[in-house]
Length: 343
Ligand code: PBG
Picture 1 (cartoon, protein in one colour):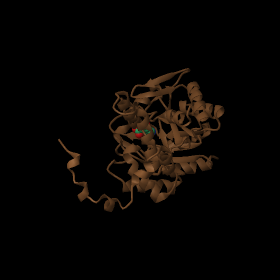
Picture 2 (tube, rainbow, N blue to C red):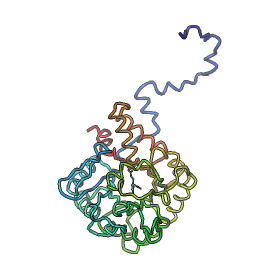
Picture 3 (tube, rainbow, N blue to C red):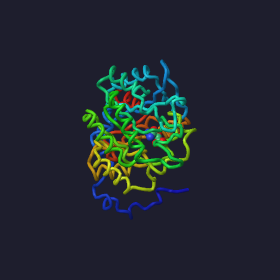
Picture 4 (tube, protein in one colour):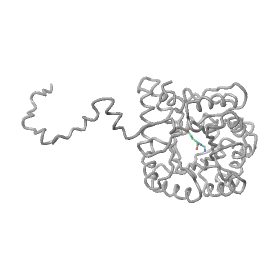
């Protein structure tokens, strides 16, 4: 066995090596660690994505996302009231559309009384102080599960953009404060900005899913909105290749030039290098989406006792701050807000 006493420390000049420099001094006590902390996660950094479902008094669990539910509008209002009481700045709305309402054109996306629009109106009326982010993309509404219109196997760009403009307008009309296009069609930010401005929605902000990757980490989300079984093929002709990084900067540059007020990188944890590059290069409000699969990994491992779920949650979230994100979309928002507020 190894004998530490046998190591000749006389021959190793620790004083020369250290020269009085000891990094551990600052880490010695809790007060000191808190004092030298460079980044801090705050409730102000959180956007809470919530899933919606038709009906009343419904809270339908999402099997692959422990403690995540699809809420009917009345329940969503109650939950958003709680989120606002914690000081969570904003929520993002995602509908589970009744399969009977899905068609190849995603027509329901243009219905001013669709689930998202009704939820936005109800939340705006009950909780006017919270920001409402509405996702723009056709996938919750199409029978094929794609974000755009299809012709054969092809996803049509400009035709899709026209419909996304319509979708953004019905959402703005319903009270969306932030339009968040997640579809990755070319030119949609500029088109939506122009249409919002012409229609009297000049104050509605745009948060562009600017660098959105074709990721395996969206799996549980697709369960939640009911597209995992219906999706035909994959989204690689519009979402980005995970191998690319310069391309993300170009996407962000274009979205900013077209009028995005805020940009987002998605997924989060595997793409922190992209968050950092975007923040350093453009110095604009930059968000990261800790997506469903990231949430599921942390919760799944914690359930098995393989990691400490609470610590992993906090560590993953402060990592976004360290990477330069101004805020994070996370399913952990209510849990982390409860923790940070000491309630
Ligand atoms: C849809 C959309 C997706 C997510 C947000 N908006 C899924 C996808 O592109 O297939 C994923 C969010 C998550 O996984 O938590 N355009």
